[in-house]
Length: 343
Image 1 (tube, helix red, strand yellow):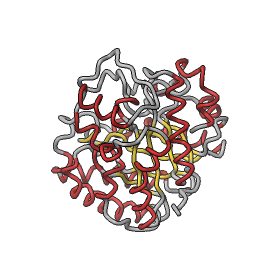
Image 2 (image 1 turned 120 degrees about the vertical axis):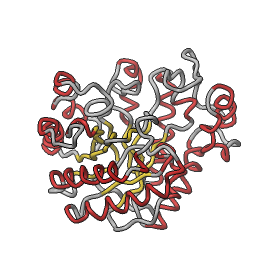
Image 3 (image 1 turned 90 degrees about the vertical axis):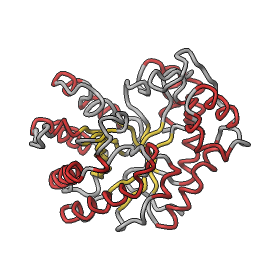
């Protein structure tokens, strides 16, 4: 039986607000407001995942930008008023971000950048560890390169040791490589204490969830794919159009249809690992691009939601608005009420 991630069983991301955008005052003030948090409360969720970029809260020399912290403070305050918990997700740190390999090339081999990363977490912990039940920490979003798995384990250990001096009881989420792939959880060292959460992202099958995505190399911009379909079809289409390595996580499931049994099988080993270590299991991102049909998207959400519930996996859908995946955008209006039931 999976250990429950209490207070973080179902949630939604606030992607594109304090991360992955031009952090102008106009954007920061208007993209998410207290009214959005009030609306999110009606979705039946218990938390939000809040991606933040380091340059919101510190300049290039590492000096604190106090005005940037105000937006995090506001979000936590709005959520507190409405009984929502918050995961602080460091989406970008100095020297590393998941979607820019050139910018990130030296982080895992640069002790100064790693020290800056840990010091930033010490600052965040000092400010936000006052309520260990309401605010959780996610160390870093989507380490990509599987070759740095051992180095990443070492960085995790150092960061945890120093954060724990300040925040001994706060939940801390850690994930593996390959963009937080579920298959990389096996690379993680055993948890260092009993307030660790193993974290993964799930956009499988990616050829469906990212159909016509302009940032996926080789993907036709007019490509469409329905759901459900066979896993073998997903593998074949991935190999035909985009990087064949993308289909690696699902290749052993080629005999299945994409559906509940697919997700049961795909999650099974991660559940076993989490049960062995007695750590909660959490899916920090999952969703479908707005290029897919709303009806196909709903069927995907219904299947993955059912298996999250069966296994007791906490999760946060990607994402609340815009960012090509926004569930409150007009694209999803035909299925919105049913979609919300399946978060």
